[in-house]
Length: 266
Image (tube, rainbow, N blue to C red; front, side, top):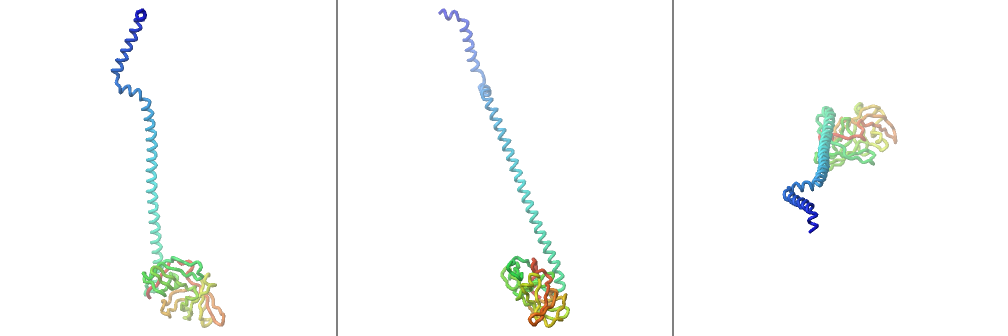
């Protein structure tokens, strides 16, 4: 009992403080307490969210740029295709323009334009394959020409392609005519001459039958090929094995031919 008397005032203070704590706990808004307790956690979470949002925004921007780049690439490819088509049309028009002269000089000719699609690198006489065949009404022995003149004939026909034997080959055997003297002969090439774009005229009657620079054309005597198609010019007349022959330079550079006309009717 002595203890309580001596410490009566201290016990009273402690009791009042206890009651005050109970009052505060009953009346303070729990939400406010939660807010103060979790405020540091909330701040850290917000920072984390904002950081990730910035990263996602950067990725979204990058994706948008990539889409724009892909669209630009497609546009560029489209423009390239348009340029290629334009060049093809332009080239075709230029070829047809050149062939107008051939048509004007030979109005009776009917022809089909064609392009070289294959060459045999081991072929000494530069025979080649064209992109037109029987479906395009191409037939055996159809003449093949360029704006510079006669270069060969169709020796093989497939459905969508055909092969040309050039006048550089030994077995071409094309009848020709000297436009100056009306002397005739037969073209039959050799491997020694073909690489120089030259061929040989055989069955020449005399040295006077052909002279240097004479213009040679197709004779048309066989009726397989039109007459008066330009072929080349005479370079020389020579004598060998008891017979004369002439060396002929072909007007067209057959090794580099890319586009031709195939005469389908005359």
